[in-house]
Length: 411
Image (cartoon, rainbow, N blue to C red; front, side, top):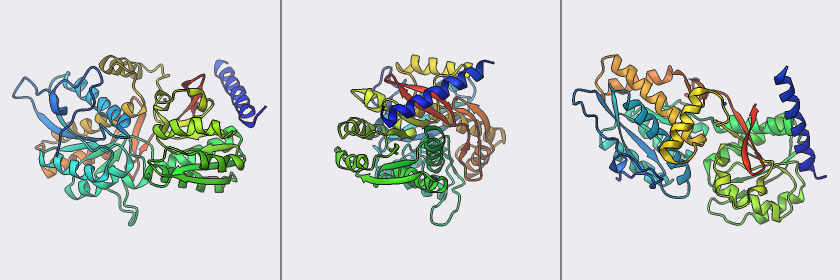
């Protein structure tokens, strides 16, 4: 029996034991036309019918095309669903315009300026860490309320060189250090690993942040790092790095990368004979949808901020409504985007209740203050913010079992 199978056997036994104990979480561009498409052109919600109804304009900055479009489209669709549901209640109406930054830092900056020039009061975005960090200082200087659903790098809300908090910037997702630490602890405490390897992209902030946190935590708890390999963002052949890792025979391989990289790593790890339990973070969401043969990552574990295996009526309604609206089940990115829109719009409502005029600096300042005081329950759990504007909420562990992403438990 291989180490991977021995480890999985131990984990299955643990699951059975827990189960027994239980018996006694400058262009406005619409996303690709995933049926059904947006209700109005140019990523803009239909205006309200009653001219007396208060209206607020917000922007959505996301990669709707390009290499990480799967993330961007999910975010767009999650935000749009919440806005449609909110507007259907009557009263305050939220209009939105979007900009496709294609996962590019320079385009993200262009997009930010485009949205500001069109008069947005707040921005949801961007999606990945690099483009988001490129625009956060601009938003901070402008006093622009901003929230990202998915940018996980620690420096999204904090200036890495000075430690200053970007008080205007919030997020509904976990941060990279949290995920890296959690997965190192999971490897050591649950998988029972004594040795680990790490394969990361040296060109992606997300991947670097996760790697650094995992390695630092591994050193603290006595999990030996026997190999550290890196790859370029555009790489398609990871076999040499995986061969080097396989030669060190690690108990686990931590692969902090996006779904498109998982689609490369999975089959290539099998081809080189790697025998290790695969571990990932929230960038793995959607991996099974791009893998021809899901069995190449069978038994893998990754951390996520959302699970559809819930009996919460609120979550079940979200899943049903999202599926009906978009013809597909929501993933973590869509769920976190739905919550991001909820957080922002609740703050906008509070700023209006303060008697302030939308679009003014006073209104934006009040919106930021109300976001900082968030205390809500979304589809990804109960959310409050710490002093760095990072959410305090539960983490979920997903395991690939029988070719499906299955909820393992909280950790």
